[in-house]
Length: 232
Image 1 (cartoon, helix red, strand yellow):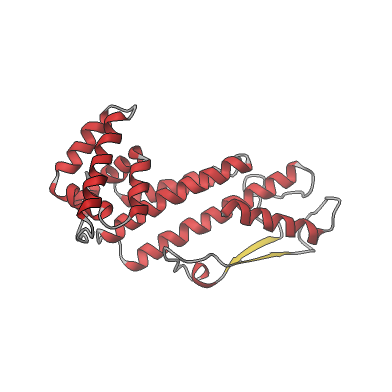
Image 2 (cartoon, one colour):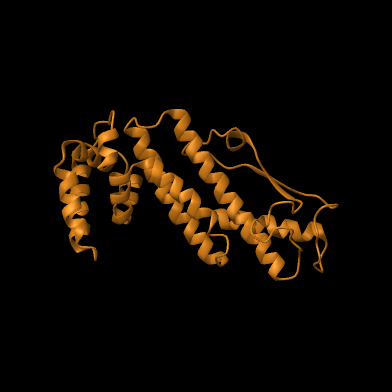
């Protein structure tokens, strides 16, 4: 279990009652899971010295991370067995392939990936595996990829509707004339867990190949609103 071998430190649990309840739920969900191998995995982790300390640190300190851990036991096992770096890289790659989904599906996918990223980044943080700069870089990288995925999706959708012509169908945002600028901590690559994402949306009249019936400005105002909706 790679993650457990990488642990350098862990905070003591704030609430022993939460630890007890979390461990009970951990085992109950694993035992009831359709993947029968998860039951043995859950027992192995809780009986391991480092594994038990990790579960106690999560369950005893953070209800949010506890829910993230319990919601997707398959991902929890991947995190513990493969470590955070490989999974983070995998999530970022999967994001890039999600732009062709329907808008409603993409919204759900982004929320699921955001939950997974929150868990793996926070786990690597509290275990002392990643430094502060690595934590903020990973959070910023995910936000950047999520924005790029959503923009590519919206431009591809607009092209299919006959509103714009694209120079690059695989990467619709490339040379499209539509630009999103990340401000503040996102622009600096320093997002933390509670940071807002401040964006500026711009379009180039001379570069954009707009073929819709409304004005380019009306179109891109609507596009920007749809972007915010998808990212929420």
